[in-house]
Amino acid sequence: MDADAIVVGGGFVGLHTAYRLHKSGLRVVVVGGEGPRRGASWGNAGLIHQGSTTTVPEIMGFWRVVRLALRRGSYISSNPWIALRESLPGGWLWRYARSLKKEQLAVRAALLARLVRESKKLWLEIIRSEELDTELLEQGSIEAYFSEELFSLESRVVSEESAKLGYRVQILEGEKCRELEPLLREGVAGGLYYVDDAWVNPSKTLNSLISALQRLGVQIVWERVRGVREDGDGVKVEADSGGLRAGHVVLAAGAWTRNLLKSLGVEIPLIAGRGYLAVSEPVKKRLSRPLFYADEKIVIGQTADGNLRFTSYFELNNPDAPLDRSKIIQMVRKAKRAIKLEDEVRIVDEWVGSRPCIPDGLPLVGRIGGKGRVLVATGLCRLGLTLSPATAMLVEDVITGRENPLLQHFSPARFS
Image 1 (cartoon, helix red, strand yellow):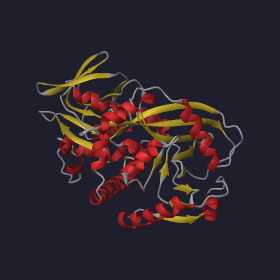
Image 2 (spheres, rainbow, N blue to C red; image 1 turned 45 degrees about the horizontal axis):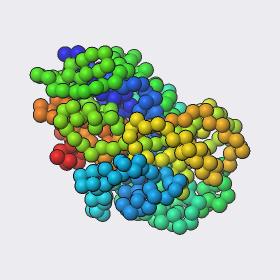
Image 3 (tube, rainbow, N blue to C red; image 1 turned 90 degrees about the vertical axis):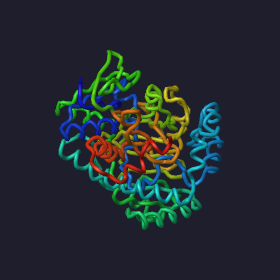
Image 4 (cartoon, rainbow, N blue to C red; image 1 turned 30 degrees about the vertical axis):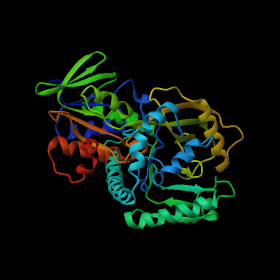
């Protein structure tokens, strides 16, 4: 055996999984794909968000998603062929529409709220114990609304939900919003202040976590995986440079996990919900904390050097499709309606990445295949950074045989 466990995937889920398995005494190899920038972790918004109670957008209403997808310039869009295919019985959109029962939503929200709390604790532990370079901010985040109607609706929903699920949020009038964030433009109707949110610089954090794992002796190979098969008493991973064998393999390859599972004869309803990132040159003005422009679903963060990071969109498309630059231009233009910036904000980096999304809004964690030596850890969609440490903990529980009642809710068997 080349290792006790091979982790396929070099994003936050894969790296946290490798970290926990290494700490539990296993020999771990990470096969990370084509490089850190390739996966969804690189362009994450950076928020460790306490109000995250679904991984997919607008889960409160299917027809609202349809209306948004049809609206020109919306943050939700789809490749027409993919939309048609996934609307057929058994497809992603078909399953998504069937999962929107009120009682199901409440159960899923409670499950994710538990994972979010655990994840923040685990994030802070690893950042401090491994001295990661993350640019960690713990000033909370603001969700700002310029539409009175939207603010009235969503502030009421969040207020009720936070009381049930136990996370802290303050409802702010427009003037108080601008006191907390002076860069907000006049006309802001109000906001939600998530007191316990944290923020990290995703690309810097990803590189720092990779370096920490290598210091600990975890081997990381930046190659593409072409297939996985159960082989005698182990599992063989076919990478670009040859095969690797291990007692266990964890598939945490994000939006590409679906294709790898096909080599094992396993089909899961996973689709790429692509997000876009634009990074500006450093600006003198400083955000007080991460800002979510709720009307247009744009998250704005700022690095220690002053670069603004604009992230948005949920685009159902092929994970390898090229970047649509019109979305970058549109996103930055919309963001400037919410915050006061210089007339010209020069964008120095543009990126698109594919998030792995499951239709019922819950992660997929558990054993698959005939012999149970292959595990899957995917489906975190827009919460890959937020939930990655807790997801890694669940994988560790499966491999080590530690009982965890949460695992039944995330099992791949629910789609059998």
